[in-house]
Length: 203
Image (cartoon, rainbow, N blue to C red; front, side, top):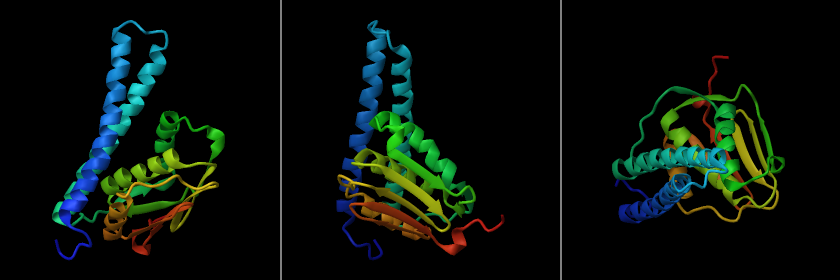
């Protein structure tokens, strides 16, 4: 495995446990909501359908994240691409989904990302893995969450700290390193620093 720091089987098991748990959770929510509608509990059909849509989004997110992670572990390589990504819009997109599922009040979130924070990178990888990291940050935050971004750094901080990140975040860090993104994290914050060559300098 070209000197990877852990045994392949250990990584694969970690990935399987993380993604299978989240995929099962999303699938179970969809099935339960659809059965409720079928059985005539339709007083809140609109809300139920919204939960189905949110869970469907996460189901697709975790499926793509699992695919990217398995490919990385098995092949030990990630395709370098030059896709343009607007970090602010990307962050807002997931927050709309995760806040509903985690029941996080909007008042517990502060989002401040420069509109010109654009990077050029592997969009499939960045969207899949960054959104999972953001999802975990929202889900495990125990206080006000501050998400700030100014080239070349994006930071996510929690006033009372995070309750704990899944071990798989270390694999995500290794994957990001392959495309020039330094991911650092501790019990109070997460940061992503983009290499200069990945910044969109065509503004």
